[in-house]
Length: 164
Picture 1: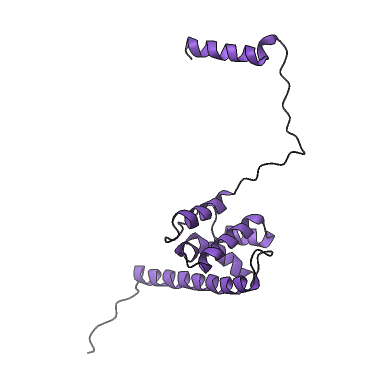
Picture 2: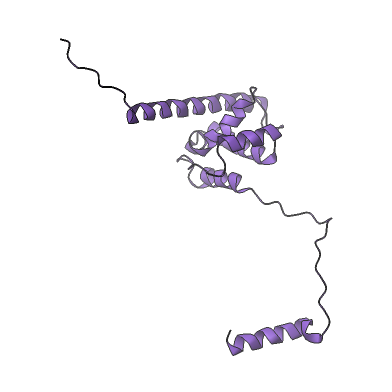
């Protein structure tokens, strides 16, 4: 550090009372103070896609694949409920971000419930019904796309083009 920076730090410490020889009080977290809710990165990833590029599929999130969302769904965690509501509403509004990409991983968990869920009252009955259909369509579309990609990358044996 430069002398000026050290001098500034010294003056700051003295003016704060830390240089008086008394030991500073230990700062302990207050158990009653609520923590600021931090939006999990998986939900933030989806939110950014829906807000910033709604006409593009959300890129895959390596930290939150279909297995992650299924585990969150089984616990009915707020993270899952937030993500499912976000993606379903985007799909209901015909946003591509809600029909393709990372939201389909969330839909895998949503459809795995086996019933049209209202996500703990976050959706009304009509939204839940329409959202369930949109989620199933998105999953089916992804499966068909993967099947076609698999057939293109591994076409199998050659079939003779002439009959002898």
